[in-house]
Length: 196
Ligand code: GTP
Ligand code: MG
Image (cartoon, rainbow, N blue to C red; front, side, top):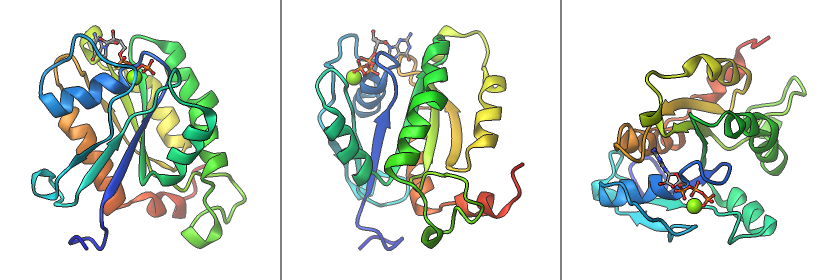
């Protein structure tokens, strides 16, 4: 048992094709941008002693071209935290975060009264989410303006981060935020507030 009463942390990356999920994982592992990536990275486990929170951490990729809807459902059930990735240069990929991925997580992992949510009957996902804007190297400046309204609307989103698998900007931070969302969750605090 780790210091936070957990055996391990399981991080799942989801998002539209081509947003850079596999590149993010391989950049973290090799500390350089891979020019060529497979559709899906092998599951990797980061040993406790090299993670900031000292808990073994599994990082799981998802690829629609290699995996089925059932694989997706199973991975969502197993995840402790989901990184929802969009590409900052691709508006459609951000649109799909609200139109496809957040509703999918809400339906596969709905929060019940038992885990401190849904008193108001509103649907919230029980799995914490990190919203990840990848490819920040392609934009002159950040685009948090279009993301803040989403973050305010969905209590399950713990943190938003803009990063780049290419320049390695915010890569280790992104995985650290994901770990932190599991080990030191703040979502219940949001739920307690009136978010009208
Ligand atoms: P699927 O496996 O099809 O779902 O895609 P994916 O989300 O795993 O994306 P992948 O890592 O395969 O990257 C898609 C393309 O985006 C590749 O050509 C990458 O080189 C490129 N890419 C990934 N990350 C970055 C980044 O941070 N900056 C830039 N400029 N390109 C990137
Ligand atoms: Mg991939």
